[in-house]
Image (tube, rainbow, N blue to C red):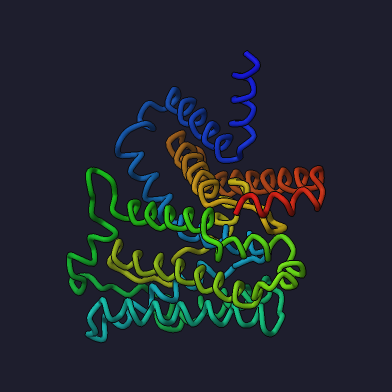
Length: 333
């Protein structure tokens, strides 16, 4: 019996397992009141919703582990989405348009990284400015309207966001592949371990020989790349490019990362936990819709979940103390 209790305690002490159990309970409870919730059609919708904001969540997880923040993910996605559509309208092949958009996204990430690492500006200020700048570029290119690229996209490109493989949406499969790669690298790569070290104690990381500036630049470039992928896949999915894409996505991504155990103070977090976090948010949103709860309550619930998750993170780290938190950062990597 003691061994069973020990196993249960060990499982429940892991944030990923706790969030997973909450998801299971939430699905079971909602299914009782709304039998249509646990159907293939609704599960597919939830999977697509997870993939849509999932790339942002992975990026925010890395930024928070680093001890920073990234508020421009939605703006960068909108800008690269509009850029892809705009270039396609000029008669350029869609794959070339994607490469140009990726180059733009990487430049944005490089700029953010340089401003944070070399210039020393606060990540909040840099990414807040880039959020408005990138969204502004999208508004300028579209003059506030949408760009239709219907009939200009090959089926091979559209398949990336609208196709199915063994009943699973291709968009969700791409997200799972990216998430799996990110999870493996953050768990087992020495380069990614440096991100945890920098987020845990930047001064100690610098003294130990880690190139802190390069680590910061790399993270912001990766975050921008993930945002760019989201923007491009949006074009493939909807056949339109809009400057309104992913408005408020930053809040959802931060919520998912923190719910999954990523620390706001840096040095701790996991991609798997972030996946569980975004899954929980989308399950809750779908449940509210299926139960005919007003759409205005959805933002309220998401905000309440974020405040609760951040409070739990703050309290847990205050209880453990700085020394224990630093050890955990190395172990998590």
